Length: 413
Image (cartoon, rainbow, N blue to C red; front, side):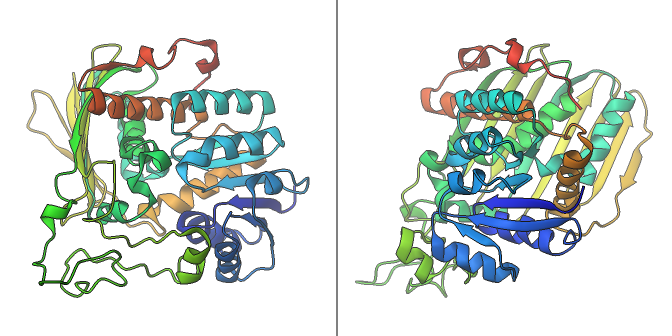
């Protein structure tokens, strides 16, 4: 097989700065970026300039997907379009890499799974945390049985950069399905991954709110007659605001691109309209009685993810930003520590790994580390969390879909 010809749908930061630059850089000998698609032609042109290539540009995903000369498509569009774009690509006979989430609804996930089954093509889920060396080590220890039977798991994320979600498209459920789907799907997947295929999530309860990023919590005093906002780049308080985050990606997001679609990346995170949360906790019970929780905090001075595992034989912890894993057997004062060496590349070195795995899966036919079915389960927990928050009740996943349906019977990696 010669060079893989790949198209990218969505020319934002993830599609271009992660995949595009990797394809024209480290993987240039095995990949050709043949086409880019974006509904904003100015952004698409900026993306092509950013990559320094002479590929074709399309203003619709359908136009790109219909090309006969593409082997694979990377879907890095806004979440609410993932289902449509994945089905277009699969029905056109392309291998697909899709950023999380698989879709913003459970029904959408099921439709993508059906399309992937019919197409008989590789669909790789964009769960880069499965490629993080800390998560990989935890999964290895789980496989070795050092924890015995896992009966509880905690995922805790502090994300200083998450505050900018409330300045961008991510703040609208209409675009993401909610942050429990857009952001939480990462950690729900890690929990599912570590719990293993022997059990599945059964019910979810959730508590979340906008506790910080609201008008009454502006972190600076207003001057008489001088309103704040509406964007960091034009706000008269930008130099005083400790959370000011003016857009810096001038080729992909600028006044010219905004003139086309009205989108700015630096709306005031305090004054912007939003229907997502800035802090919350989701609690999950699995079919075998095991429990899990995921908490996420976007108003915080630190950035880290930590995973805590409780098993019948041992306790374990993973610290992503500390690149450390340790575990301690029950009834023992012994502690086994692993310090993981530095990795190059985005997301702690997991981005290069997930890109290489995607290319390898196309060439070898090997099942990806994360499949569309894994994507469904993480979205299902996220949907249940959003519903629990809205209706203030425990949500059974069986309300959303049949967990035992034939469509979901597939070997797992």
